[in-house]
Image 1 (spheres, helix red, strand yellow):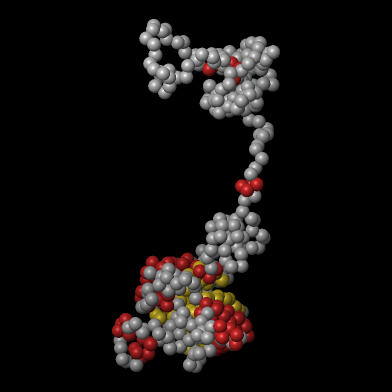
Image 2 (image 1 turned 90 degrees about the horizontal axis):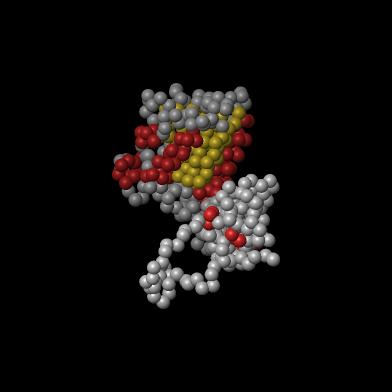
Length: 433
């Protein structure tokens, strides 16, 4: 007949919680049958060491002998004493008497509790090719730009953009104050009819006071790039190709104003989308720039032995005041009207007047093509050259990142876009490190 086992709430060896009917501790394997049954008349001892109801009776009482759990010999289920301690084949036994492990220390399989389906299911996996949430890294992003798992709003794709195209690179950032990025850029490489390489960069800045400025800048940059990729291989002179690219960009922006009449009825106060444009083409021994608006191109020589230069003139109120001799440059750009532009691409522009110029630098350098989000913090050519790293020609992407960081450190009040084009064009494959 099986001996009656004491009812314990915790293992006397390791304090692991026990359940009714346990014969061995599930944590340390302690043989619970080795614990002597508690006497029926054992008093409950309070925390202060006295029995409930008062202090101990003052009678002589010899100190009780203290036993450790390991000092007790266990018994088998039939009440017989176990064999002498020692290893048993097929059943590892601890050298400590009374403690028996009835499973191997490293079992091949563990019995696991059935998983809670609410936890085990986890977030819905994003389908292949779909966007993954930047917050939880698991949920799929819906068409409205929110995660289907955690509901986190996703950053817009255009908030920060970086691109390398052969030896040239560009970076665009929303900045620290604007709620969206209204700048856009395009980079490209081409081959002239004589087999020599040509690279170009186009940067566009949406006019914030116009409707859909982000769409305008994107359409203009793409149309200009397409025009250059078509014209340069055909042998069109780079300066003429730049002029045609600006005209193509203007047409693309103008087409955005052709909205259905119903759209204008719902938003009667909308005006035509508009943007500025600036670009550069680098060919062997030739540098071409073109622009409409107040985005700029700077020339920074690699060895810094000759002075840097600004290669464009703004279509702005301040530039007009300086050109007319009514103000000096410091006075004009300190005026609150300084950045009011007098030329732009858009259906409501007064007239399209693309500006182009060509140069033949006699030494290597880098061409910095940027929006006013950068040059507001490095307006003079010397200031821009100081912000450009010394290894800019070898690391254009790094340079573009540094220049965007310079604008953000200065306050980032506007969108910031900058393209870096080395001159002369490095050999094929000698892009940024």
